[in-house]
Length: 127
Image (tube, rainbow, N blue to C red; front, side, top):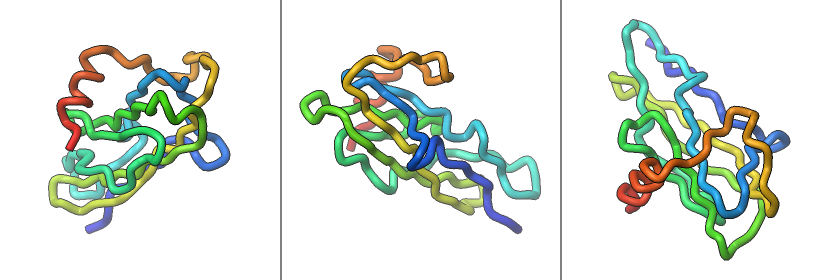
């Protein structure tokens, strides 16, 4: 029996850019793999390290992590860490590395625009 293979989103030197007044949703399971025996589904179970200038939360479908920067705090580097578990409750941690920018950035790198439904889901699941 192994552990799930999970991947960070971005890195300390190559962060995901998010404009200061926008939220973003990250599909953190996209590049993750469950451990055998298969089928063995994965889910995001918790945020283990919260951002200092914003807020991360797990979406209700347990597949994404949502990041919402705090407007008053401005730009800067951020990181949220989370735990991914398989159906046997074997878990692994990973992080999303974020750079909050003062000016809008191009979203053609695959970073989705936050919809009102996702933002409402995020706010509903805040502790």
